[in-house]
Image 1: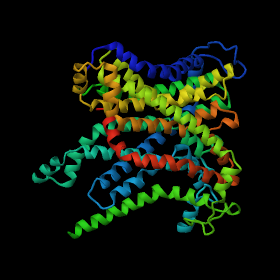
Image 2: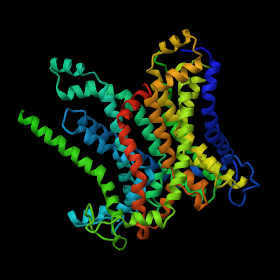
Image 3: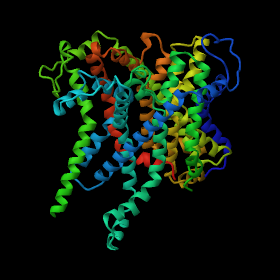
Image 4: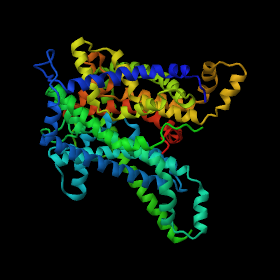
Length: 291
Length: 277
């Protein structure tokens, strides 16, 4: 490892300059606005008003209801991503014919640009001409009001996001499985262990180091997944009932121009995620070098 | 083969086929709709290829709509982001892998923390600044913003890959009188080619597929990137469903092919770059 720190600063400076411009500067600006009364009528003559917006966010029923929905949204998504991804990875890890073909086809949802996925699924959920209802009608003889009810739209967003998210977990799990030495299984088999034993005591513990960071990232990405919720529900339809925290903030900020309120709301989302992942960040020896 | 094993295999294939249908079906659906003749968009047919399939929607997309302009705009922005992204991630990742310096750990953790920012926290200040400074419709802002989006992920990825290249290479080059920078430039960078390719892909895709930042920054219809253009079709699905579908197919094919082609490296790249727990 080199000791010459000056060169290291040279190598990292451009990256941090860009991050400073796009992330740090807006972040500081956002903190300031969150303590101000900025909105459409006080756009240029804003002043600091302290914790007002934080208090009004935290005392509103809307916030808590959307928070519950967001947690539910995140938990369901990540649960399905991990269980489907892990399950498929276990199947693909076997020595079966045609697994390259299956693997390639199963990655497809990850490869399609996210906004196209969302807009396409909105078409598929169309009540009259969408494929989902046509298939339901033809096989079971009933249809569902997907995009016109609160929980119908929630389910539509959920299905869309499960579709686009499971391949990532599958690939990460597959990489993890490939790094487990085969001898471990052979030794365990000689010792008379059952398949379930081997899964619980070899596969799962050795997959953990690969899966924990992936799941943490998955939670963060899903919690903040604006694209899917916004584009599938066309901005929160029906009448602003289909929101997670981040899409609701966008609506208050960019449609209703409650700028100070939206800035405080964004800060609260950030703090929730930071608290959630703090444990992971501190415990992981993430920055450790291999040497 | 034991009978138990055969039943097992049938089960494995059944599950794989089921999920493959789930993964592929929506894609076949878009293709089917894009091939329908213009007057039959709203049918209840579920045929994989419509019986009177035609490419006329594609012809309309290129001749009657500004689709080629959007594509040129998106290519310009995405290629610029790709070049900037590779430059930034390859150097920063190298420093994290090879140098011990003050603030290194804090900087790496700061990079992960950026992933927790809700997009509105960055968009709102950006939006306010734009209104105050009248800085609409400028690609420079878009390129800088996109370069930062994929940067934390790609930097970590590059660092993980450099970690697998033995440090003895640099020591040997140093003994032979090679300066630290030219060691990096001539020896290490070429060896890291697979990781550079993944970084290039992710940077390109970050720009090619981004909708929200563009929606805030770009108002002029002549400067629209592909996501903005396709959204104009999609907001009126009843009328422009065919155009949207054809556009979606054209936009997706290159990135999907690239992604599949690179997916072999992706598996090893992601695991190497993953955080060690």
